[in-house]
Length: 217
Image 1 (tube, helix red, strand yellow):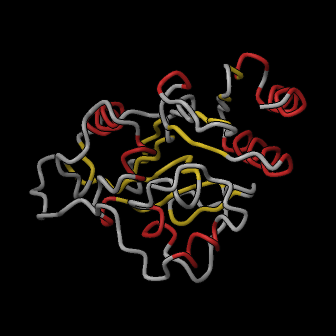
Image 2 (image 1 turned 135 degrees about the vertical axis):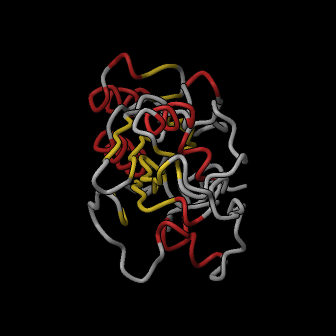
């Protein structure tokens, strides 16, 4: 990244958040501002749910590491748990288990040490496991559906679109999982996997019209 963009990102997330070509925001608001700054500079974005040292961005891109966004909050009344993208699945399971609960429909597809944002982007949960999702668009702007709603996106099943999207559409910042009592039998459920987008390129253009996301596998 050039000096001007580096200075802007340090202003947004703090000097300590910058390491090489990576920035590590710790809130969704910072992620939004980082994406906006990169978009204004015409700089592509790569995303990682883990620490900044765990991945390397393509040449000319800035790596946005979401590993520091890792709070886990269980809502007993609503039987849900909200987890930041950087939280490990083990941390989410442990928080639920302390309340005698487990994630609905969660099979063995995701390893315990995988980060929540990565597991959802890879489609390692079933659709029925998720009741909410929050994300930042590559050009800036936050969107959400279900859970702790910031803004609903009319016309899209946002959860279904981002589940298994492999980072092609947006930067997932938090996920809300459905919970059930640990002793209740789980219904058979398969991980979503990577979906075949019905709208093809049109869906990617809707979320990322400037093609700012560097990872498009």
